[in-house]
Length: 401
Image 1 (cartoon, rainbow, N blue to C red):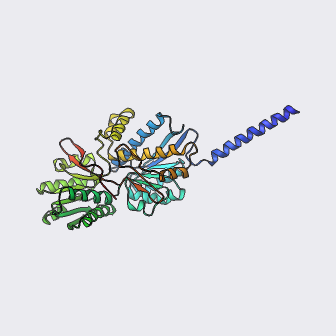
Image 2: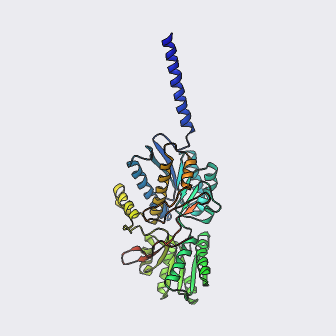
Image 3: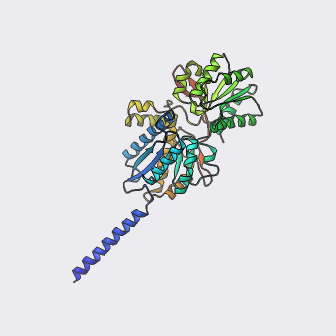
């Protein structure tokens, strides 16, 4: 009789423990398992924008492999799921819904382009998914602050504003005639925002502002208009092919001007397409050249890339690999701070409490707060060197908004 009662008691206790364990597992936030954490990413992997997405994913894969080789986050391995959106906002929405509904991701590390994140924002906010944006930052991403969305890097407006003010004051260009050639869309408007802000802060004015249609192949008329206006400082507000086209037209016309471009032109194809016309081109960015391995963080990333990847994959890395790695390191730090009791609420809290997070020189220190959802805005000046086919630092991190 007593033995029977003991068996019943043992069975009840065991059943209770199993039920408690099951309830605990059911209570865990999606994407958190005993042995892994599922992280999602939406980035373009095909077409011209894949230059951005592939470089970012390469760095994220390096981070994933390195974290897991170190034993994971409190014993949990990183399980990275990447969805392709082809840089189409509608596909971005489909991708993020798949990651949330099917893959059951815990958080997002990579949210494609500017308009793409805006398209995904209702889904992200509805599901309260922690999300780190490192590819394209716009004011609408953090104004007003979105509770679970953290943006790493400057807007085009912020970086151009900071770098132009530095250039004008350090090189005594107050007497220059300023011009801008910009794309007639949201991207171009953000670039022009920085141009206008810098000139206003310096008490200067623009000589001419010329817009071009998105996708334009021939920019000879726009460059000629700038030349006829007598410009001596030209902000070439293109992306890759457009910047190269403008530079070649400027060279063909024999124009002796200071040329500045926003960070999408801080990519190898600009040098390849423009050739000698790119010599001395100045660029605004918030990360240094990826070839600058004297910077400790970049040197470490390159070493890890050669350890875990093929030579061709390493060659495909660019500035977007750097921003992706900084975001990944920040995510890792916040995950570690939450311990084994990992929840989305804890992750958001730890990210919000970030103070002076350093990436060993890849980016200026990151700080967030209760109403602060953007950081890493201090820009840096980059210069093109066509002799080496590389970019080089032309300043340290500058003061920025």
